[in-house]
Image 1 (cartoon, one colour):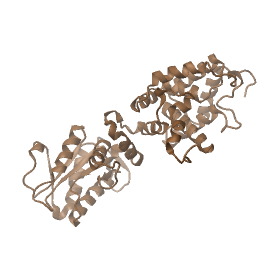
Image 2 (image 1 turned 45 degrees about the vertical axis):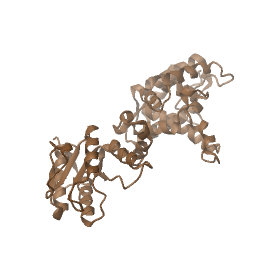
Image 3 (image 1 turned 30 degrees about the horizontal axis):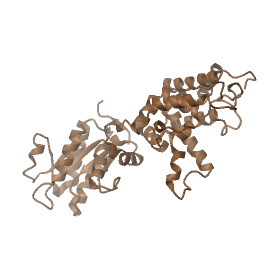
Image 4 (image 1 turned 90 degrees about the vertical axis):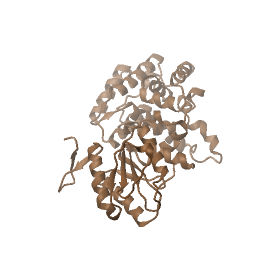
Length: 372
């Protein structure tokens, strides 16, 4: 490390070298965030600390800003409050006496070194070589939560309501304001799922928490199928669901029914959680226990189609009448007496036609794109 006083230019160049030496690179968005932080810190003559890093993210990270808004915070007002508060910080370590990102000693002590190492870990877990602003935001949040645990301020409360101020964005910013009264765990979950190509923007407020819990279990929702069928317990019902599950599993997809796990205490909300969160649907129309098809399945199909999600409609070949609500849809017939074979054939063909999957290569576990 150089003995000369630090400058923002020196620190940023050191950051680039350190990241590259570990086989990674900075995304343009993350570089903009950290450039903003270092220049602001140099201007204020303060070594960066958590609230400065949070300010940089609030002002320069589109994904963090969107997450705060979705959780009813205000990133613009929060940034303004933090900026005003910065002038009141006395007796902190001067910028010129801080340590750069590559500082080799006590890396779990200095803010810069801890945060960049945690950021690298986030990218490595996702098998990426580019560090994102969301990686850095999650590193900052998890750093603060780990400090709470070390200080026995996390998970040891007799009254959990007393814990709330310590897990808010305002705690990292070191100043309370309503604009920052956002739970950092919720932000962390939103950012963790941000790369799953799933947007919570269209999810109703009352379903966001159940959907987040679903995403905790299924981080790649596009690979999940909501199976809409009667919750029957006959051997044929079980065989039909097993056939669907087998057909999807061959492509690395997962078949889910709403009775497998509850993400909401309310039945309707739990079903809607699956409909919003799953990437596509598979509906089964049969007459195993009733001559009339299940009206709930018809409703769920219409709901998913309204969400613009692909739905495969499997129909018992002996079933005559269907709801006029679904007139015009193409149904794929299957034989209930040989449900496994007929469903496997129909569902595999539909998946490939919809280009939702990769096609297994014969005689190999390798897969190739359907569109090839």
